[in-house]
Length: 109
Length: 115
Image (cartoon, rainbow over all chains, first blue to last red; front, side, top):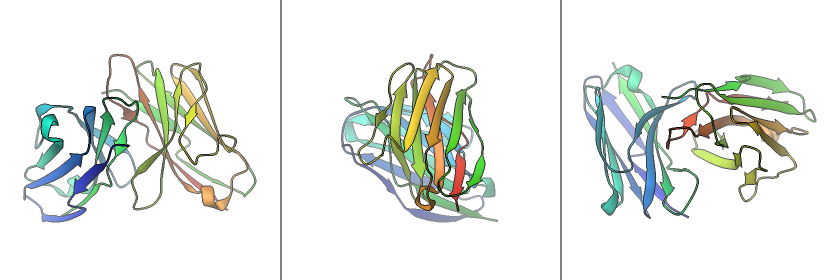
């Protein structure tokens, strides 16, 4: 099956800093989603981005499908951005999302 | 985006009892629903996929007789953990896809503790 690797596994920032999270995948995909899992476990949809670039406030994402990676940018980070960020992909030939191991982000005041 | 609800949010039960978890898509018709399990500090692992009106497809290693899934309508799926044991304690999350959405939306999860 498809492999999904996220980096870094852990990231600690001071409030106001910017960060880039990376997701590499091993095969062609037709669905890529970024999620934020809050401390209560809820997965929040951030982006549906199988290709291209999208922006939503302080967050933006870029997927380069031909090179099999996606990046999530967080600017001017806030303490409420803390949590785990997951990348999940669906192979072009498949029917389900495969999750990466996540990036644990901690934003300190 | 679409909304998926899940009930209950937390359940504590005795070993040997059965527990039912409900997952509902509130504002779209979910042709496909998914059930995941998440252990502390780990990623989500897919347990099964169900299409409305069809039998669920279970992932390798998931016991279909222990984790009963019913997807009887386009807005409701249920997961029943039968004869629960302490090793079944985990965070269970449902997800749905359908309607005009290509992406999946997730419920808030159910934390199951088996004593």
